Length: 323
Image 1 (cartoon, rainbow, N blue to C red):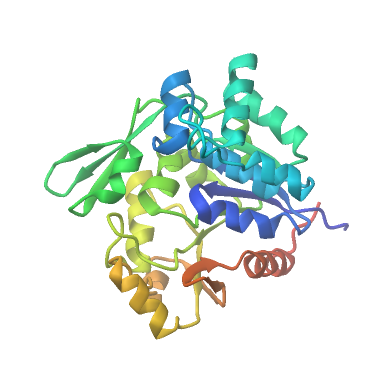
Image 2: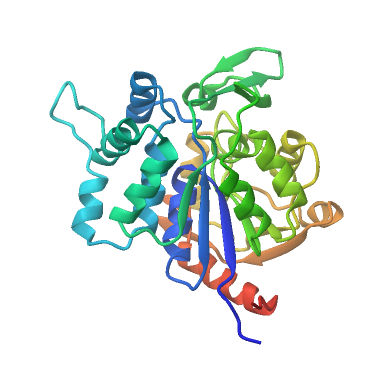
């Protein structure tokens, strides 16, 4: 029986998602990226409020990551204006997505049209097609309103939630999750890039019901204001608590110790490598996959996109995806 391209759904946002997609697009996968629209800071936040649309920033980065266009065109799409009071801080891609949304009257349609222009590998779908606000409740009951303020929270986060809470996903999001062979959750900021997608009620439910293999790409470092001292199990438990049920089959973790100078650098910003409590993860019923998936660039630890893509390609072959 002839093998077909595996259907891969990736759920997340922020730098982690776009970094990983740059690797995945070079392999024979049918990719659907479900991208958070909880951002309310910077250029995205201004356009969100001025035009009453979902913030375009994370979507723009994902389109750029999956595009197959001339490097100069991608550079132009990502270009950020800096010399103008009116345009200062805005990227050209954000303005183009906003203009297309205004012209077509629909954010997801604007994304589809922009994806054609930039020859995107796969499909980019916003987790919600209208403006939402992400709020956090801290352990003392304090409420922080707005995604951009949450990482500055002085106390641990008890939960995050969306306003309005009854926001619906696009039907194609649910179809993509249902027909996926593999669903990758993360990497990215736990409470501000990953969980907001799963709080769109039908997305969380679809993930629980999905027949495909559901894999959490665990973060490499803890994050100030979000996950200080979090172990891998704490990340997984936070996802389960917000979805309401266990919804993962496996977790991919980095198995290489980071150099001491890098750890010291991160200590200054109150971050540390995520500790992988393997036995507890296995007790949660998860398959623990240990691979060398980290790279260090200019003192910053990132996921190595090509290594993750190669691992997934091999993993998909082992699991024998057939047409």
